[in-house]
Image 1 (cartoon, rainbow, N blue to C red):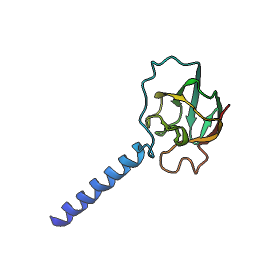
Image 2: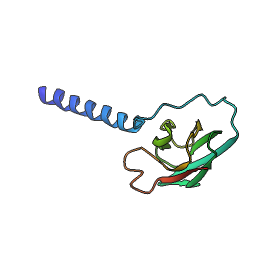
Image 3: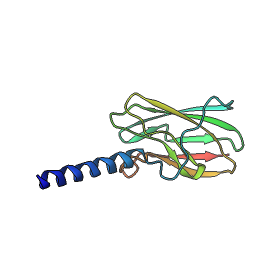
Image 4: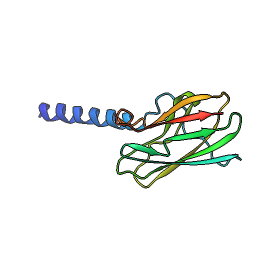
Length: 129
């Protein structure tokens, strides 16, 4: 009986850890209200294990709406930690939008923060001009 209880407790802890890893925003802020006026709209699609397009451009000081669409078969998200941006982790066929206003020019990386998706090639570049 105690062995079954110990096994069930371990399984529950493992499940909680998996859920946390799938939804963890890697220290960036949660999705923002997207009814804000923007000067640019960008759609990025994610599949296993790539983004399309894998390079996007933003204008310094101007608001842009980035819509991430999951066209894959696994949960994915889109993170730009240097710009403090993260979409929700979404399932296949779902989409999520965020508004970004980059204050500095430069080159940044966006990637999927789910499990090892970045290591499998699910990343891209952001150029702020």
